Length: 234
Image (cartoon, rainbow, N blue to C red; front, side, top):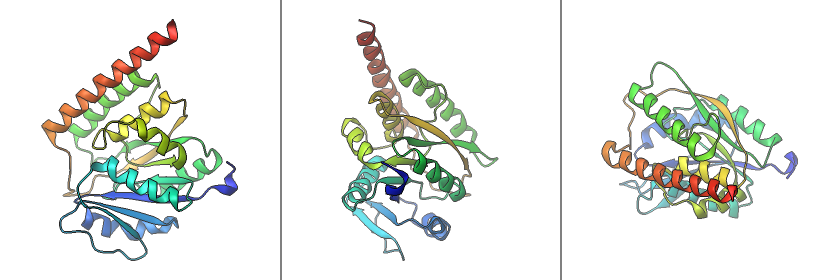
């Protein structure tokens, strides 16, 4: 694929962040891309947004499930790449734009945001990220990778192939996609993205259940990595 055939679209999963998205949307639209918002089972259903394609999942299927729904629709419409960005406006649009420019020059690469936090980041989130980075390094061999940043640019065709092998569609989805992408031989490049946590922002993270799910996911991925290394060494 050459840069001349680069046709990106922005896909935004949204669950319980409708008000934040409404405030963020005018800034997001300055990128100049078509935007798809996936209503991930919100109750009541989201209302139509001006200049935005709205898809709906009747049941909450998780961030990953919503992203896959939007990606399949975008691929069917002929788009080649997907900008993933969080609905609550914590990522700077300027950084997403420079990531898109980089992706245009390297269209087979997954560009993954590496967060640069300001003072608004909760310390618990920052420490949790360090734990995730440690496990992702074990699972991939990548030296410095953030598995949780919700700002990325994916080549759509490759993304849809990889997600067929991704188990989770919820909080661990972003982590597992990075790992499985690397296992499939795909290239991952980091791109610094400044992150500001909104004041009084809504979090969908379930402290006990999601931490248990992350632990189980990382144990499975570490075992998968070990089996791959054993096969290579034979």
